[in-house]
Image (cartoon, rainbow, N blue to C red; front, side, top):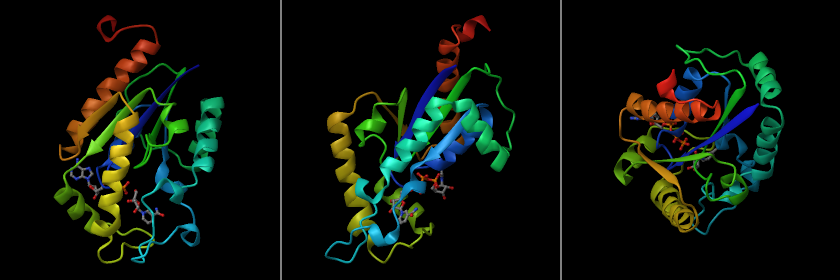
Length: 210
Ligand SMILES: Nc1ncnc2c1ncn2[C@@H]1O[C@H](COP(=O)(O)OP(=O)(O)OP(=O)(O)O)[C@@H](O)[C@H]1O
Ligand SMILES: NC(=O)c1ccc[n+]([C@@H]2O[C@H](CO)[C@@H](O)[C@H]2O)c1
């Protein structure tokens, strides 16, 4: 049994979930772990002097719990997938055929590569970026729980993004940057093609031989 672990990181509203879901719908034996599911309870999230909840920092996330789920996938991806698909039957699009002994884990989230134990696991690291204006506009259309209070984007979200990104780039190499303003299908094609090449490599053959 072979495994590939793909990271789709990047800025908030860069399109990480959208891209991860598209890959999931087209490649069998894929599972998605979303970092957003591991936010700590609101009562445990720190508040700064302006009253802003500090959601955009690693301490706001239960990374131990996230790592336990990843560990459980790594130990036995086939059973992990089966159990999950019983609860949430997948609705695949025109799936590409892949060998049934290759399993793919997509981990998507805004603070993946800053967390070393997680960063060490990735075979490929995608990083979606969009300019400030695009990000702010997209974020305004979203409602989180709790919702962003007035001034939150400029007072917390964007400054933390800039800080986290700087820290990440000082320590992490081999990032594959993606322009999140490109069309959804274009982004999907880039990532899909590269994952298929990885799968073929693992399966011991090249695309040319198909
Ligand atoms: N390529 C794209 N072009 C235009 N809009 C996009 C694109 N991809 C996603 N979007 C839109 O941008 C918004 C954010 O997308 P998505 O939820 O996938 O981002 P995200 O990076 O997972 O966000 P977050 O993790 O901050 O919640 C959604 O409204 C989505 O429809
Ligand atoms: N999912 C949540 O619990 C939650 C709550 C408040 C804010 N957020 C935002 O999610 C983004 C990452 O996807 C971050 O920018 C958080 O501000 C999430």
